[in-house]
Amino acid sequence: MSRKIRLLIVEDEVAIRTGLVDLFVFHGYEVAATGDGRDGLQQALSGHYDLILLDVMLPGINGFDICARIRDRDREQPIILLTAKSGDEDVIQGLSLGADDYVAKPFSVAQLVLRVQAVLRRSRIATELQNQIRLGDQVELDCQNLCGRCGESEHTFTRREMELLQYLHANADRPVSRDELLTRVWGYAKNLDLETRTVDIHIAKLRRKIEPDASQPRFLVTVRGAGYRLLVD
Image 1: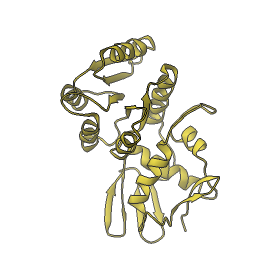
Image 2 (image 1 turned 135 degrees about the horizontal axis):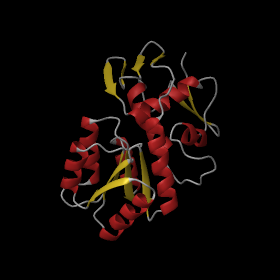
Image 3 (image 1 turned 60 degrees about the vertical axis):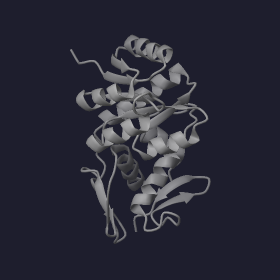
Image 4 (image 1 turned 120 degrees about the vertical axis):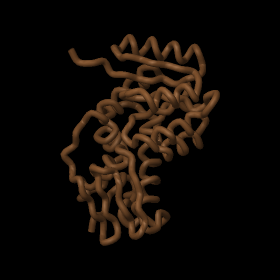
């Protein structure tokens, strides 16, 4: 018998937390939950969870700090942030700290389940994409070890950042649309109606790491009306 998928839910609103626990237990997950930030951090660092659902506003320690602490320890742990719908800055900060995705409150229960399933699916897929990427004579990326350099600067990457670069590299002959990236890199179903800035924010993060000048991209370029393209020459 295969083991159940284990989720950790860190959410201080009792009604939301209880509802989420019931929802994912119904879908067959093993769920742990807490409403306190410090306890959530302790559980996240000491337990072994397939995915963490993490609210931003928490007592004790906020979701941003928890996300950063988790990423210091584990760059591959799947994390989805729960943010206020109007919190655009929350979204940018959370994804910059290494969250895999975000879901804005108030959220659709059905969409939340789909996005959890998508992140879990991507975390289980063993890609056969290239493990070493070179861009020009300045950028070298070690995809397997999630690290690389641009000139004299060395950087670490999250698994999702590197998967995004690998997919763009494998399709370097053409621009790749946001919808295709959401489907092939994030694992979302086609035609799923998503309001997300996840792709754009990840692109911005990557440009700060692999571009000599992020304000004038040389390798990771925008193709107006078509998406993004990785120039490897």
